[in-house]
Image (cartoon, rainbow over all chains, first blue to last red; front, side):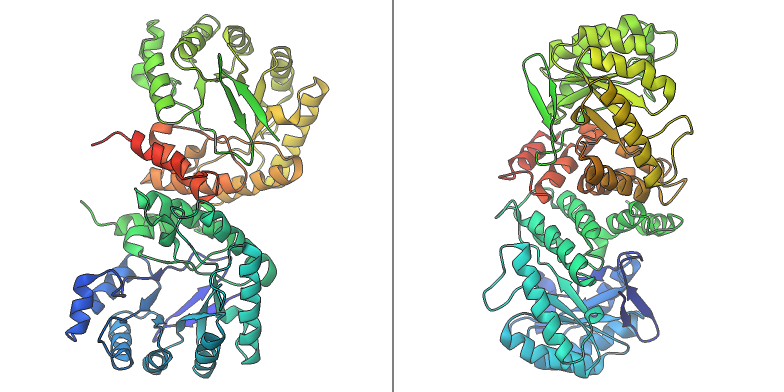
Length: 281
Length: 281
């Protein structure tokens, strides 16, 4: 099953048999005070720098989120999208909780975008899926619904099935739904990692879908988070999560290491290239 | 399926549902010039230090190998085993290519040891399995035979089956055979990692056996080997390799991170403890 995304003149394919696609998460004000203040002041100058740095570190899809208090996302998101695609020839992942901003962002996109995100909530399905269908985008779908985040893999799978069914009604194919099995913090629940990988395996077996996940959520509240993130990215990849949202500047080498050890890096050149791209101390 | 090993007064259980058991690999002169020279001079003083350091870093089985040119292993191995078990209350893994040395080592063991190793070669099966049976030890079995290391997972599985059959004839149970799917370097063959994890998955599905592997072999010839070793340990663990031979001083935190993300660290305390045991800079 192939998810095809496009930049202005590039094509990125997400599939089980090809190297992992990193969705760069950096263009997002959440937890970034300086970037938040810049966006509030209408200063977008950090966006091209973050886009280029993530592309250099191996990201091939870039998430774009400008959601911060008092900012008009409907006006700002298209500007940010244009800036990113003026800088790097990559597909974008339009990220907003506001459907009007998603639509404004999609209008500015060159190529074929990913939308971040829908989930199984009735209102969300109704608001987001028609936009995805209208603009022929792909969409990230979180395995949660009106009852919250299900505790068991089986219940998350049920939510995934419901979203796929609702998407199908609008002509959105399973290959254009990037399911997210959802990652909770192991510091709050030590079975959280196992629940996520089990959900991912069930999704892959049942629907064959490509998947994303925010792996770093798993390590919140723990020391030496990079070690946890690295091993979790490997466990997730083996369970079928082949397009994680992550920080390529921190996880880029680990992702290429996973490709290599999974037999998805034919001459080891992806890994060697990531090694050479590391900032030298 | 449980593999039960014992130290002088301790018991270590290897099973799919419990935390990964690290077999500490440091007490081995291979690639260690100073230690080799010490052994050749009859100086065993490094052994208790290495035993203690590995135990502190979370190893719960210690490999003991004193095989170096001009050393009489039959005389030295039992001394080394006694020194290790005088220092730490842990099971040992008697490691030698010389069956007479294996037997001498087993005579010195307190508890229940692991023997490193047998493989599918006719001569090896004949020389090693009777000793394993006689001393009621468990044994590491490498998936290679008179034809060398098979290229495919299916052929390695066949070798595993043959070893298990030969072991059964002497009353050695499958739970006392720790199969090694064999790790070759991805620098020589980029599919090497995939072949190993696929073999491991087949072994677990077919025989249910516990498994070991020398994960670090996979990264030979590559830069930033620790990243490759960390992700490979995770991929191997998810494929069923639950007793890797490794350097706990380098891999200890990663191993506990894998346990935590796999749901085998009930309160995250194994990971936190490994974090606290890290040498502070």
